[in-house]
Length: 137
Image (cartoon, rainbow, N blue to C red):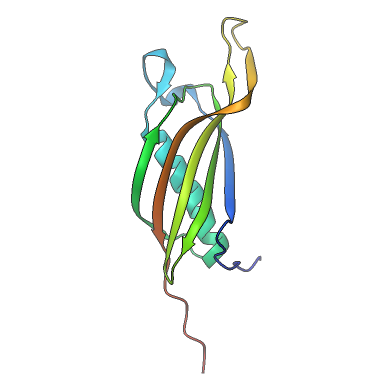
């Protein structure tokens, strides 16, 4: 078992995932913005486990920006970066990048890697973790 690391500003956690067609919500196979927010919750959970040995709890989001569409069939990369560490709070910057996308005009299952990736969603968020355990006496 790996022990938690210190909550060091600059620490990043990155996930990648395929966006399934079952999550398409709008015309053009668009996925709703809540999909990115849920992905932010997943990377924040891993961040808290890594820094504090606890899943933590989300307290707030701020400055959520939807900059480009996320579509079913995309491959996305979700990153959380620790920007502030208080006693129990952790402030994180988030980014969803589309790194791969289907190209149906080339064929039914054709796809490509995007270089550079497309930044789709950004946000800041605050998570809280339990107070550190008191030392045993």
